Length: 513
Image (tube, rainbow, N blue to C red; front, top):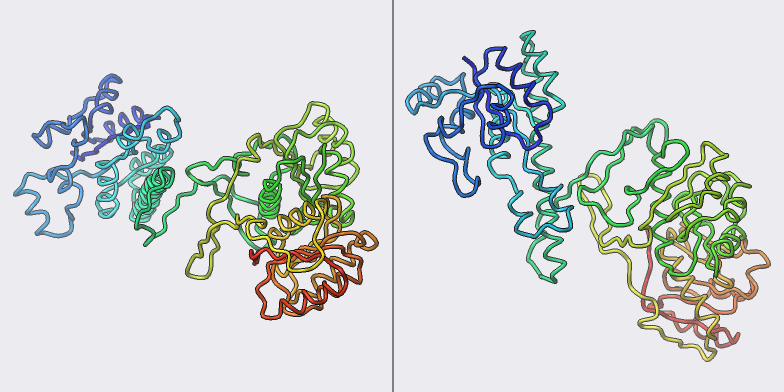
């Protein structure tokens, strides 16, 4: 008689599965709550302690961790010496393992759970059995997912449980246990950081992500793509948004919306951000969301067409009416009034995303993949007014100061080289992703047109030559902010002094590649 060991936290369908195995001639070995559940459903089981001749102990921490269990799983049936040792030590072979793990992730997401209660949900025996069975997949069928029960039963009935199926299920196990351990590691790291503990860790990076959706394609139609979310949810994450209307999100929609959210979180005042191809094309602040929209729209009425909009207040009917006048791909906001929804849903393809905790999201680490590796860095959260210096004779007034700081909040979300022109808390020109800074300035100035007069200019990095400052002065810019740090800073300072132009040096660079 073949043997199956069943020990599950998620009991979905396990009674049916066990009964089908029994009908196929399997003897069922089980543990704790699973054994009780199966017996209550009329399925006879052999308790694991009857196999090990050792009682469950330490509040259930030790049940299956025993040579008579692991030898029965790990023994290779194709090696005579293994078969002889299994006979010698009375290790009766286990042919199928169905195990799923303690609900650690579900537990840590419950705010009322103590740390010790969470730690008790770290499964030890389950992952050990799964890994052992997966290592010996040619002899042991291993299941960690209830959705595989029906398929495996069908294969067993038809004598089709071949090595390909076994290999696939084994791979699934190692993916599952790796993700499980990654969540534990991330939680422990978060707990330490919350308490301000400085630990000598970081030799290896672990992270766990859960599949959200298969996307139609990636950046281009020839590229396949998938969407994942962090196993431990992040407040304010786009992955937590509720889609109220519109087509499914595309790869580019998700990427651009995340960029818009990162920028809108910079501001407490009512703000609207418009993004196109991962760069902001318009950003506005106002006493109302409608005022902020008008500034963002006026910044670049052409590029906003087909763009992504992020707003940090509830969208009301007056703003919805203006949005409805142009083609937009996505609008994300903390909420929408019923009247606004009625207006915006007139366009069935427009994706409306509700994200109530939109402003609470704070990225701590930025990850970037490279071929064969990964780069990790802290998010660029340095304040621009901490080391604020004004080396020029002319000083910015209070209004200019507000616009200068606004410009630097925007410029750090623009691809380098980056120049941003701002007037009255609204962008009027943005130059992004250029190989030289003066060209980025010319693009921003051209975009602004007459609105460049009276604006302020923000730069993501220093000026190696005074040419950018000269372009700004000729366009009518009235104040400049930049990180400084060039060996030729004085050339730009001298030019500004000659033209009575205030220039601020922050000491904070904002490269974005």
